[in-house]
Amino acid sequence: MNSYSILVIDDEAQIRKMLAITLQSNQYKVIEAATGKEGIMLVSSHMPDLVLLDLGLPDESGHEVLRHIREWYTNPVIIISVQQSEEDIIKALDNGANDYLVKPFRTGELLARIRSTLRKLGSPLNNAAMVFNNLSIDFANRVVKKNNVLVKLTSTEYSLFSLLAQHDGKVLTHQFLLRHVWGSSHQNESQYLRVFIAQLRKKIETDPNRPVHIITESGIGYRFIGNSL
Amino acid sequence: MKKYFFHKPGTRSQFVISIGVVLGILLLGLSINSFVGYRVVAFMLLVGVSILAMTFDIIPVLIAAILSALVWDFFFIPPRFTLTVGTAEDRLLLLMYFIIALINAVLTNRIRRMEKKIKEKSEKEKTVRFYTTLLNSLSHELRTPITTILGSTDNLQSNSDKLSENDKTELINEILVASIRLNQQVENLLNMSRLESGVFKVKKDWCDINDLVYKTLQRLEPNLQRFRLSVQIPEQLPLFKLDFGLMEQVLYNLILNVTQHTPADTLITIQADCVRDRLILIIADNGMGFPEEEIHKVFDKFYRLKGAPTGGTGLGLSIVKGFVEAHQGIIRLENLPVCGSRFTIEILTEKTYLNKLKDE
Image 1 (cartoon, chains in turn green, brown):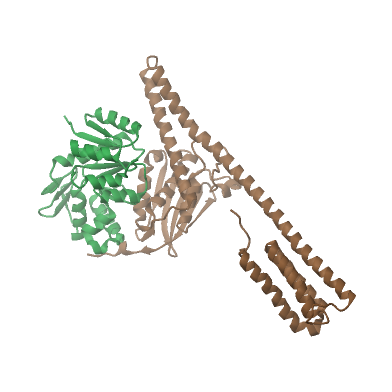
Image 2 (tube, chains in turn blue, yellow):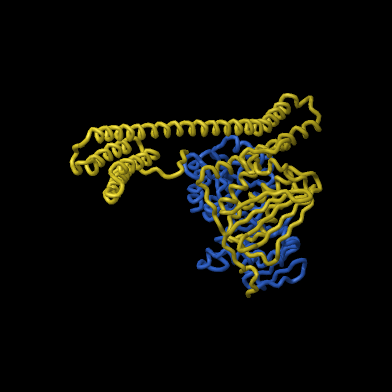
């Protein structure tokens, strides 16, 4: 049923092959590029539904490729990289990557990320309301319900929560959240973010210590997951 | 590499200091000459040259030796303020002074060179020993999973018609386990080299300790299934400025270490607290504890307890220590009175009670 096309930009033939087999067996159409230049060319000629981009390419860095294709390409880009540095990941997310996976990753994880990223392609982002397993958000009336019971949120809590929920499945960096909830003058005051995330978890999660909706991405940010498995 | 007990000045300042010392003793000698006599001044100069010889290079010391002989002759040996030496006795003294000063300079220098050589040799031996341990440990820990992967895939490839479905599933599972193990070893090695390179940065940001602890526990969930857990974090704990990623690795390695070395059903206690502005993190268990005679070695690189199960490089705990020290913190390990052991981490860092304020 899905015939989404995915472009894999990675210089390692082994990785490309493994990904091609995995993705094809999950009914995706796969296009491969071994260099950044080739990748940019294929993005413009094929307009794939999703790009898997390695950051360490031989000709130009994945960051360059990302910046370049983001000038016109709006479909999702998922970074796959061996670079573990948080700075690199944050940079890629800031430059428009939708998600990241650090090599070595498990294919189950990869497929889940691809599914979740592509799902949002079909559904418009600015829904008036979102309904998940045990959570619902009515953006028009600023109402959040957990198990059909109204959750009382302060206005900052609501801003933070609705921002996270609108980006269901996506990692939002600390900087991004601070900028959009508190404004650019508070970009370095991450202590507020910690406090409000903890408060939100107490109100939203069934067990705030084992969150299933608001997930911590160590050193990078937070990811909201609406429908936990 | 080379470590001196005190810093040795550069060549130019050695010359300056050498001449300075001789001139200093000259002034001292001039001021006390009338009380002690000119022969005592010779000994004072000799002491000065000897002290210089203990640290300085040979050339500045020789210059000090020659200069001091001239100084003694010119300023002190009668007739004073001439280079002439009056009596045969004084001539002999001056000659002997000169010889002693030279021998002093040359001998001390030679002893120092030999000492340095011995030190270098023992340092080299230590490095060789270290790398032998490293290679032994590594070749075992890396080759075992690689052998498993190669063997299993070979088997799957060439015997696929003879293998039962069950065998195949098992071989594939072996490959999976070996890959995970290999990945863990590589991860440890990368962390270690990150530490050793000295270029890695601690990126401190406000951390919710609760989040840190539970995030780590979540990553360890598959390992923790056969253990009991007790987490004690006070409601009033402030936020601390730490590198979340590094501290997560610290807790991960410590708890993983407990799961690897204690029997099933062991109780693992994780405590956090704030004492005298410091963050205290405690990981304790009621297992068997560490052998007293080995307890001081557990943070050493590549150190593994005798009879420890395979699967470790002996790097986990030294990475823990390295990351804690990168936060200017300290880590202690002690055995508990009845049974088990306790790791205590203490880090002095910025904190804020903002999270306990009820605003809005």
